[in-house]
Picture 1 (cartoon, rainbow, N blue to C red):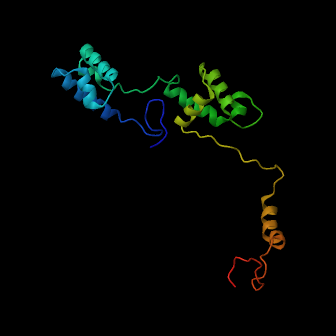
Picture 2 (cartoon, one colour):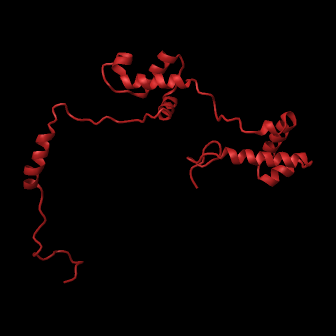
Length: 182
């Protein structure tokens, strides 16, 4: 099994919300037949607390109260159009967008951009998650000298490197290893 997350699911495994809702609807049928919360909990392998929450919701709002709400987790602070604008700002680069001297987006810079453009505070981990959601991934820039000449490097590898590379010893010489068979 994988590493467990806070919610008890293996890491990387998504919850099947349709199956969870279907389980709650089966529990409603048992409640309607007069079954106890403890019996429902045993039958579905859930805690008594979960069964109690289902029963309370069912009593207050019927089976409709146990339907999946459609949203998981906290509502995003950025609207869909804000995300489009963020992607466009990222595309323009940090020099044009925020006036930085280099063309490198870092998470702290992105957090600053989100704060200035949309007036909400994000941590670097939240910003990283947001970037993945809008299709951006972390990239590490290649560190190369400005004076680098790829043509000269290629020629050096073709001409000079073979001359200085170590060559294996002659195959005809006897081995000094005592582990080899004679």
